[in-house]
Length: 218
Image (cartoon, rainbow, N blue to C red):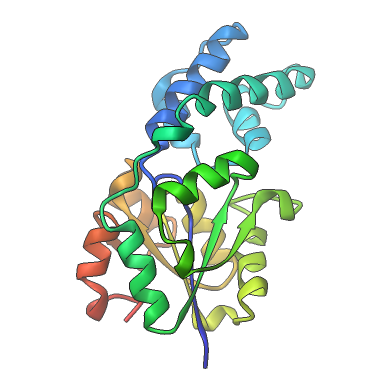
């Protein structure tokens, strides 16, 4: 039977979380909002509208959401030509593909941003499909992004593993009924990932690759 390895991208395969923190912080600052960077960091992984709601609350002037999102995109876009892959990212995806896994990306990125992320990973030959937040009604921590990834792979939840770096990833994977693996390279504590549903936690893609025989991806 076929198996699916579903991967978050930002903070899991590409070292972008802190770039998102700085560019979101600057977008909020330009709009007159004081948002601590540590709060932004813990919200990274949510879709743009959800991130803004999480940080500014439901009482905010929602007419400013689009401007905030556009400002973040413009600021973050300055880094597209030099996004750094995390250690072992491409090697891990290629190894899994050779072992018969269907590798699917589940990300809130799209368009030029997604293209830049895929260039950074450098393993397009190993990627079966990509599930974007644009393809679903609700982003992580809702299960829809992971469920859509499984639909693209044609694999049931019990034959899949989801790898991510945030509590939003772990909650989405758990709600979708897949086994969840966490990585610490996004900057969140091991305990937070475990509490949110991670069955196992590794330092980064290279550590997961080195530990595959004893991992949920064995």
